[in-house]
Length: 396
Figure 1 (cartoon, rainbow, N blue to C red):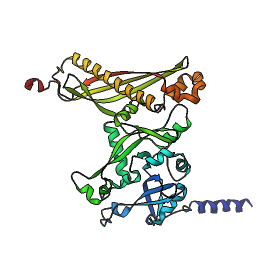
Figure 2 (cartoon, rainbow, N blue to C red):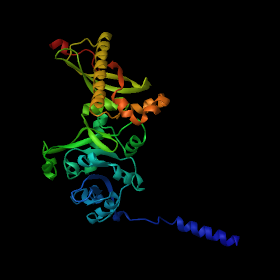
Figure 3 (cartoon, rainbow, N blue to C red):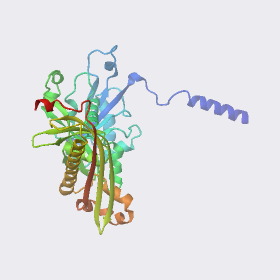
């Protein structure tokens, strides 16, 4: 009996290792790069997906057709719609490499938790895709500002990423970030917002990107603020950068410092660090935001002596004051206009003053709106680029 048992185990192992039960040939599949969800006209949702046409991405097999196909379907659940789109896309869709999810503004105002549940539950969809809000035009934004050789969702993801690397503005919100903000006390979700700049109908044509000045461009527009799963409003890109400063997520950025009535100095800021301390005193929240950063002079109109230590110190102090004012203004705007803690100050109070936070956890947003928040910045200017003395001193 033992002999037969060993033989059975060997045969079963060979069968299991012989291949995947659900295998598909490459010619039968299409990789989905992203999806957009908008409010439906007859049903609850309109789902738009983009599938890659792989043969057009290879120079040897390309025939001049578009590198991807975009198709929309309407229905009451995303679970149904992810399969219904096969009405227009003949190959089996693979969602595991999705890069971007775009949500229409109108739908976001009504609530997004129902279809986010499907995305979080689905075993084929990973949680590392970027989530964006489309202002005004909804899913129309994915058909603008793309040349015939580009893929819509890749282009939008790259634009947001490059903006964040250069200036700071895209919070890089992933699905897990949204779910964490919903389930953890002391934080509300945010998402980057995009919009079409120009004529949406003209942007959908292939000729649009053949022009030196396109008729339509998809641009990173603002920061979308949520309360629960509903969209509350938008902040400017300047406010979005200040938000990232508080979150300790600024990679690099540039600021302009006023050195006289009509002269300015450009600083390239790098190596930023932000620490937050929070507590409750007599039922009132006290938050201290401490920012530390280094910078170098990127350009100047000012006829300052840049070979003097005093100049660096004075310019740094001016920049510190300006950053304090910018960040404080953004915090006060959110407190007064929205009263929703998108900065996660509640999480800091929870960690540092647990017992008192538990007493106000259910109405933390009210405490946030009335909180005393102090911003303190230390900025050190390290160098002046490749030149110390400017030619401006000789010509001005």
